[in-house]
Image (cartoon, rainbow, N blue to C red):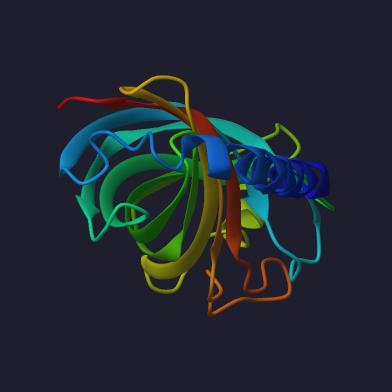
Length: 211
């Protein structure tokens, strides 16, 4: 997962450099920036866990989709509430064999959007993340008794932190990348098999403005 975090960091750095280039030339080209808008968004995700587990985990591919609402404060700042469906999870290698945990979440970010000219947008803010379902797939070496050791527990409602970057391809299409991480552990009643861990995800996709 470290390479995906590095990729997200590089995107933010590149965006910062691009922003400096666009600031002077594009500051005047903010047509439509002061109007509320609704955006449909969809994309792919790579998720895993942070440290805190006693088994090796690797990333799991999934997707996200939903709506965002752009509520301008001024020409450079907007508040962006969102409602998203997001797949998260991880694959793990354990003494009993391999298994994959895939979870379905409803995410509700409340982000501040900072415009740097007409092309670059930076996002940051908190997110409520509610797990609506989860399923585990075990390799054939897992016994039924061993599988019970890897049941998850704790609250289904989590608080996340989100940072992201957007690049406006046109007035209606934005390329988006973001990193989201749980701020508290899942499986809070952890055991020696699955201690408390935090979900993290790198999400990339497109936003399509409807108005």
